[in-house]
Image (tube, rainbow, N blue to C red):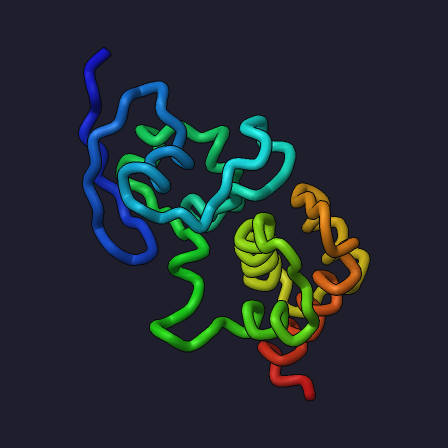
Length: 159
């Protein structure tokens, strides 16, 4: 099978890569672009570990073909923080100890960022509903929800 040249924007940078038409966006990000923050947990879109934003929409990158990124904008965990400064969500995950092994953390952070961009003042129920597609085997979710709510308050300027 022939490869296809894909031009896209990833974390604000224009990139080009060659992709097999059957190759997932997750595989392209990890293997061709060296962006290993997104993880493959299930390969079926059920765990959220591979969550990225595609044109601002939260998607499981294991379910999207790499060639589908042509002409689109992809945002990964690597593009979440400007420079060396952590995004408020990243800081709050650390402050609330909302991670243990860390495997699921990038997916939770990307999903949480997508939520707060759409709804800067979510209720606990809304956070839990939005993050229901992300699975964690270690933390029990409460610390994750508290971290998202705390980050939302900080980002809104509510003290």
